[in-house]
Image 1 (cartoon, rainbow, N blue to C red):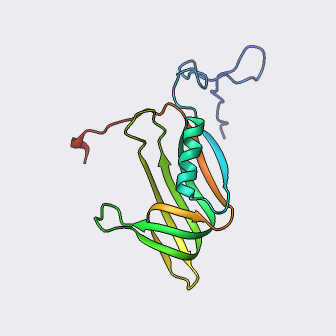
Image 2: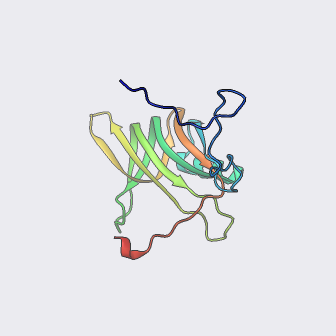
Image 3: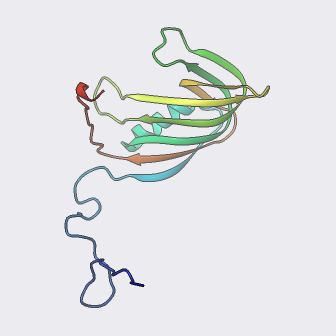
Length: 159
């Protein structure tokens, strides 16, 4: 039975492993540095506006990947629908919240999109594009924050 050979780069001083020369150290490229965070949104505030304000005050972009808590008001719409958002004013459980707010110094504003999934007291589940959500109690958000994102435009030939 043969034993696999360890081909990882090692220094002459011992067993210290060094990264390959082609990988620059973190932050050396001037690109985006991503940092995971947990955000506690206080009760009584609009969660979407709070996330945008947090991003603007820190001059960062933020991607929310999950959320939990209680919501007292939610404005949800279907993506690309001309109909106005449906307004839910009731006790709702935030099952999930995901979306991105891109900080921009440009006058036209920042692109933003949030998708919410909420549970009602009767067991029904509702969801859609969230334009407004007011926290009934403290809401926890799991997110990634970053600066200097690289915007990639995909050509239409890649449908």
